[in-house]
Image 1 (cartoon, rainbow, N blue to C red):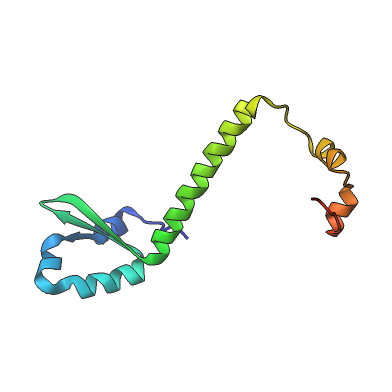
Image 2: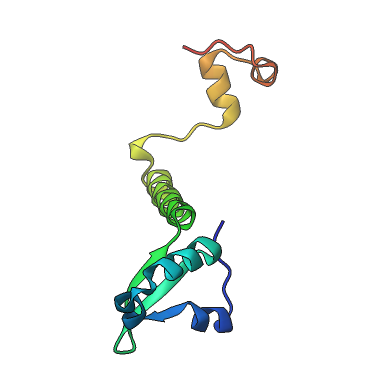
Length: 109
């Protein structure tokens, strides 16, 4: 699940790198576990983001879903030089009825 963050929460998520250098890493990691992320800044410039494993996995899955969507859109647009079949045309070509699909008894090889 993505982190919904307000401006105030964003400001609270910013951590100066000096806190890491001064032995505050353990506390910062605990905050990441609780809140999902922290933005590390050096000289008031963001240099790194620390994410919880759950948030990182969520982001990876979202990126992969987006890539698949783009590929599907490209394929639909190109069509590969082939005519797209409607569901009814595909079922007829496969010799399967909608009732077989609904019941889970369709045998498609």
